[in-house]
Amino acid sequence: MATLTLQDLGGLALRNGDDDTNRIWGGSARPTQTGTPVTELQTALIKLGTLTFSADGKFGPHTEEALRRFQWYNAHLRFRLRLPPGSIPASGTIVPYESSPAGPSGICDAVAATLMLSWVADNSLTTSPLVRLNVGLLSNVEVAEDFRILDYPEAQKGEVLVHADFAEAVSGTMNQEANKVGVVLHLNQTFRREGVPPAGAVVAPATRSQHLIGHAVDLNIVDGSTVNTNAMFRSGDQTERANEFIGAIRARDLRWGGDFATKDFVHFDDFLNPNGTDYDNNFFFAQKCFEHQHPMRLAN
Amino acid sequence: MQRHLRVWFWFAFVLGLSLGGRAQAVDIAAAAPHQLVAALRTGKPIILVIANPAPAKPTDEAYGDWADALNDFAAHVDPSVRIIRVTARAYHLAIATPRISGQFGTLFVRDLNHALLHRGMIVEPQVYRLGQDFILQQTEQPSAKTYGLTSTTVRLRRGKIGWTELDRRVASGLAAS
Image (cartoon, rainbow over all chains, first blue to last red; front, side, top):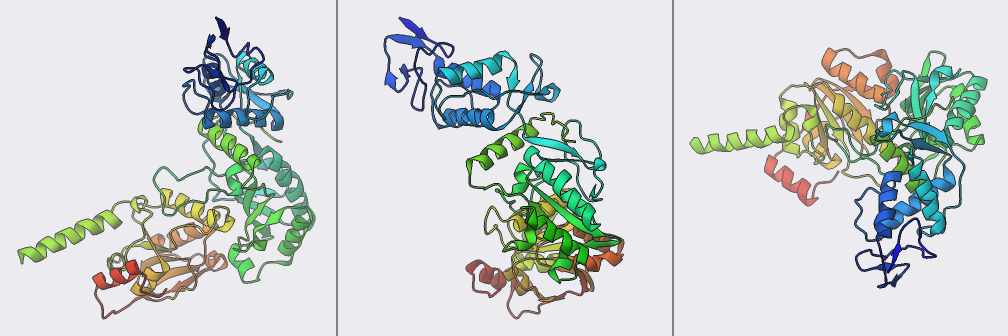
């Protein structure tokens, strides 16, 4: 009787509906074969950090979603976390890697299996898309007095967390335009944790904000001794330089909350469709890896 | 007499559960008008958050910024300060002035004669710090005005209807906001 393993799928592709107990693999019952390839796949996905349920040998929607997440990660993110054997994520090292083919989305064929097993053998796993931005190195961006530093490994004063794809918008675009106009940006918030503070919440939080994936900042535009507050914008009392900065930011394809239906004059983002796959995956990796205290690389 | 005492005991017990302890103990459920009035009559510092229970859209960034700043403040607020959330409808049933237009507002109440009002959503953490300084240290920072905080007094409604009726009207949606 032939034994099926994740390492040797023998031309099969594991998919939703497969089940080790009932010997359904590749979408068909295979009573002449033995093995636990679905359990092995789930175990690999748990190690890679995309499956948050335990391995049960049944390829269901959670396993499919976890597989899709890994394949999305492999296609979009260029850094992964390498752990010394037996250690926790916080002691891992972030290393660059080259993307490899990962098979059809949601299906585990030999290509996908080989890739996942190579990651596992290398003690590598998926990690956060967030980076640390040292605001102290920027000429026209500062951390506001009321900015609350999040509790993450290597947290340093003056550092904020943003998505790697949004870091340039803050350290490049916004800093440059602020410099040209002659204003200073005081950051009040960047990346935001999902859910509520441990002590409880007064109101329900928003669930699909750009802050939750590190693609937004809240800030005050400081013009000399004048802090352009949300209230000043609302009453039209903001300074001329604040207007110039807003105009420049609009021209650089960033969104300003003053243009939203519900005005939010301190908000800026580069908008990732909150109903899309990219948002979902970035949300998953950013929030989960923060919770598990993954280290984050420095962007500047 | 004994019956009255029992009623008062239960009222105090329920009120204590609703409003007592640290500010963090405030739950997501909004306070009823009678609870609001009772809390204001204690003369203790209170922050009234006027808000509807849920966001219009989960992608609403203004709502998200407001909710996050408020929840973060509530998690770190001075223990002597109570935060009470009320709906706009309950607020208007309990309080005559200041009037709130719209569905969002925040009232930092040192006592009925000294309060700071912020109309609309608070999206800057500085506003909460300034409001808390006002009600605890009894100082109004010059920058408070630039953050949209205006001085006011609080006048409770002298209703001809009792608390039970007020609460019933809010629950049944009879009262206009």
